[in-house]
Amino acid sequence: MKKVRYVLFLFVIFGCFFVNSFHVDAVTLRQLYNELASLEKSYNAAKSRANLSQAEMNNIKASIASAEAEIKKAQQEIIAAENEIQKSEKEIETKKEETNQMLLYLQLMNSHGDSLLEYVMDADNYTDFIYRYSVVTQMSDYNQNLMDELNKLIEQLNARKVTLAKKQEDLGKKKNELQAKYILVQAQAKAANDDGQSVAQQIAEKKKNIDYYKSKGCTMDMNINNCTGIAAVDGWVSPLAHYYQSSAYGESRGYVHHYAVDLAVGEGTPVRAVANGKVIQVRSGSCGGLVIQIQHYYRGTDYVSLYMHLLSGNVSNKQDVKAGQVIGYSGGGPREIAKYGDSCTTGAHLHFSMATGASAIQSSSRKDTTFDPVRFFPAMKGIGSRL
Ligand SMILES: [Zn+2]
Image (cartoon, rainbow, N blue to C red):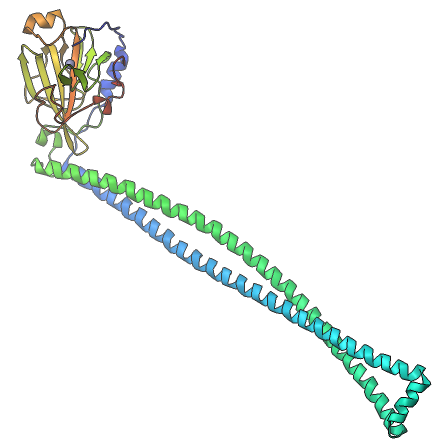
């Protein structure tokens, strides 16, 4: 173990604050079931909110589709009106041409005696001429009437086009409004789904806790702290109020690795239980000095914390401890070496380790289920980190 200089900061008030803030209230299995029931209620509420939003989304979708169909219909009607207008304009052109030719013919008949004569001569008699004349003028009148009618039709079609364009515009606006509403409802549905998912996670965790306490033989109204001996952890407390981290988790030590962290601190510093739990080991030896291990239960999983090179201990095996409770005093320096003949330390520090499972950690050079304590203690970032 490295010998490291350290600076001791005495933030006693801060330390006390930490100890007090992680007090755990007594809880019974019945309370957990009640909490589960209320979670399930809010899960169902979220789910029905999501279903309602989905139904509304379907309605809006249908309205958008019908608006789109109406827009398409209006567009087609506009095209049809335009085609009819073109057709009528063409007919007017034709009739105009016919009328012009007839009028021209009549003009010719009136202005040139020869032509009139020719025409008269072509006629069997004067009555025939009069008849011919009247036919020609009637035909031109007829054409004029037709043109007037066609012009009227074009006017009507143009008016229809304007109405249809207005309708198309209104439908487009309606469609945009519906699309905006759809996005809003979609967001509501997503929020409801997210709510449901987060509540579902809490339900799963709650059920896991209930199963755990039931497996430990807890009855409905028994304080779960009493029936398991290990209270659920709702927060983690640093094992030391202040330290200088002198080794990182998993650090190589020649042919072995160090699956713990070393926290340099003066001998005799109070060492605290990192969470509520039960002491599962108090031993002493020539490598490690006094060692204490505590079992914890946190969010459905068992954990063990290990404290090594202690100068002295405050707790005994199978004792229940509270988060932040002083379980002993740190060693690792000359006083502890003198007391236990600890050959595995070279300077004052706390060797601290965390593992999953309910069994005591066997060896710091075996990884087993140990993990980097930074997971629960953000200040243990690596060598040189301080608290
Ligand atoms: Zn160590």
